[in-house]
Image (tube, rainbow, N blue to C red; front, top):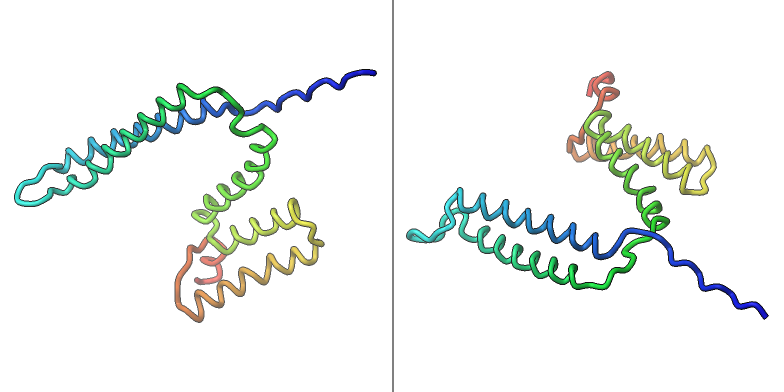
Length: 165
């Protein structure tokens, strides 16, 4: 009888490395906030100065970051996230990042249409006509509701400028 070999552990990002990086980033943020707070004045001269409370919060954040760093250095190493799981996160995060970036250049309506089309065609199981209908109708209805009815201007791009909005 042959024994089955144990499955190989999945490779991924180290929990220790991720926690160390996050702790160092928080420590840097705390140092920056402390520096800025003391530039503004973090004392108490006839009442709290502008940087008094932010300095105290930054000090607490710094202490917590140091504790997290010590804990991470003492932790036994394990996998925080596998590369397969990270790829799934990237499938959503990268298009979302491009969508937010696209709002500045293309406006919210065209960026939203492209974002919806990408997700409906790649991750959804929608027919092409359902995608086309959603990509056309949702921005038009959103424009009508926000721009025409509520009079709330949303970021516009070159298409809206060409149409006179």
